[in-house]
Image 1 (cartoon, rainbow, N blue to C red):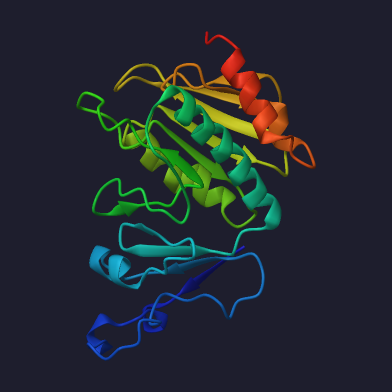
Image 2 (cartoon, rainbow, N blue to C red; image 1 turned 90 degrees about the vertical axis):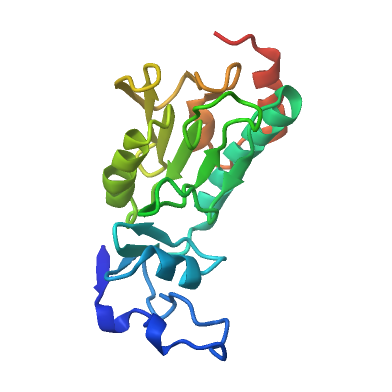
Length: 230
């Protein structure tokens, strides 16, 4: 489901002043349910000024997108995968691991907040993509947004590994780019090993994502670190 907020519901920067309370931000708290709120007629400067720091809030081509708060299950999956990625980074090196609502500023007009993204290492030779891996975790209200606008933006920016996690269908849609500027190869996985070409040696067993409760992340990381890359 989705709801669209018209311009007169958006914050008007002209009405703000130095005395405006810091709580003047984009707000969807009055809606109870799984919705994607869209606030049109916003600028990139509006987004940087009024986006809440503690909620997912994205910006694409003049529209602010605000999904419903995430579920416990969603957050558990995010923490599980981020633990594996960050533990691998601590042992083997690599770029910073960030989770939403951190913003990955792709261009001045494209500012998504992936569930997880991995930056290139600071010492990596230029040019580098804006992220080595992005991971999205669908909810009913974000699935279309993730698989449409966001996926196209990630492809356009040449992010080499893109994961779309659908817990309802127990399906991981993964796209891997064949070299810089190359085509993307799609995969639809419910189980089995999935390697991340841009992070040599890192992999997951896709079936881990559907376990309830999720497996012990430390034990899974030990398996990853003990297994040679392909």
